[in-house]
Amino acid sequence: MTDRSQGLSTEDRIKRLQERPTAASATPRVGRRHPAARSRALFAGLALASFGLVGASMAATQSISTSTMAAPAPVVQTAAAAVTSSPAPSSKATTPAPAATRSAPVTSTRGS
Amino acid sequence: MRDQTWWYVARSGGIVAWALAALAVIWGLQLSTRLVRKPAPAWVLDLHRFLGGLAVVFVGVHLLGLALDSFFSFGLAELFVPFAAPYKPAEVALGVVAMYLLVAVEVTSLLMKRMPRRIWRGVHSTSYAVFVLGTMHGLLAGTDGSNVVFQGACLIVSGIVLYMTLVRILAPKRAGASRSAADRVGTAG
Image 1: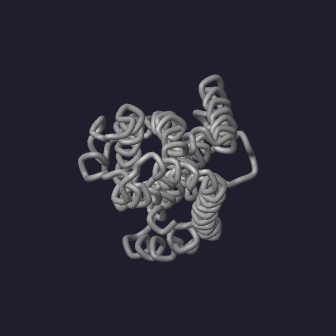
Image 2: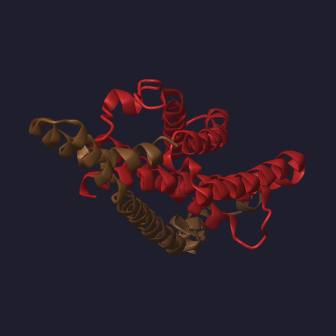
């Protein structure tokens, strides 16, 4: 390149350099920066959709298991209430029931 | 159900983060092995970077869900210090270490042009550890570790990663050639 440019004057060399297409002008800059722009949007959408879907399926599974476990729970409560004679512990026994319904499936599902 | 919303956010966010990290590793291995000939290296590299970044975002969602869940009182220490968690400390620590490595990989990738190539490559190779630790964390610490669908997904994805890694190790010439092509794309992009 230097051999070829040796015969040229300074003005000619500058002119040649200015006329030469640069890498930036040869290809559009926007297209080069994110070649997978559409795929990016697709994967972002898929990730968000699967996030919602997985969370919803977890909630659905939990509600099904809670509803199936809800039937024997009052039997336990009534048994506990029957053992205790005073009315105060019976109200105490009904208070932890929501906590028990949460902790029972939670320990079975969380502590896997 | 409402009191468990953050718990579902934490679990779902963790699973999606694991899947995205696994995809980022597979895309990275595709870049170096060129097992599938068709996709252009520039497209694979761009998506590889995006998937890694998206994995970090969903790790953040996972942490947010854990922090806001009322059942386990996960504070900053429990979330960011290994073995500080009240629940399965060793298994949770796997996830904490995987998170730090993932962040390190992402940060060094963003600063790739400003740092020595050897250091970047060394940190980037810990992506394998991110995948292994993240998978173990999901299977051992996570509630969904006993889920057959999740176990099957872990098995299939681990098999793909293992196969691609073996191809990369056993075919160094081909991988080297394509790696230099990937490097060219990386420096051009």
